[in-house]
Length: 104
Image (cartoon, rainbow, N blue to C red; front, side):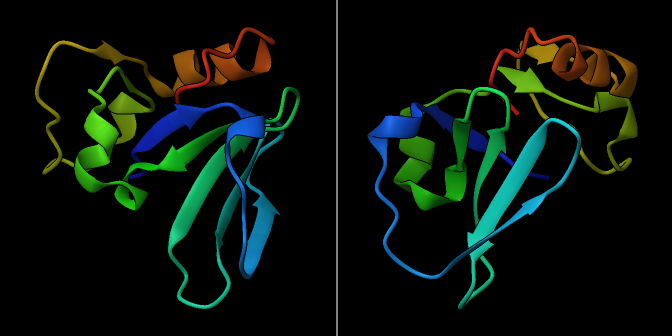
């Protein structure tokens, strides 16, 4: 599971060993080349980054707003609260339609 905090591409500075890989037709992911920690998920078309929530104390105070691939989650996962839950088909349609909401 990847939980993230949205941010503008011009609001962060990266200083350190980062590895980036293309994880889908529309996105790439980055991680620390030293320890392997997840750093961000970025939509390629608009370069919008969602930073890993674990980089911030208490996820920077953000609340869960979207759950992607909700129909593919392990049986033991149950994220509480009233938030948007998108199935695999809905997630793929969202990101391939060019109408990304920028919340991975």
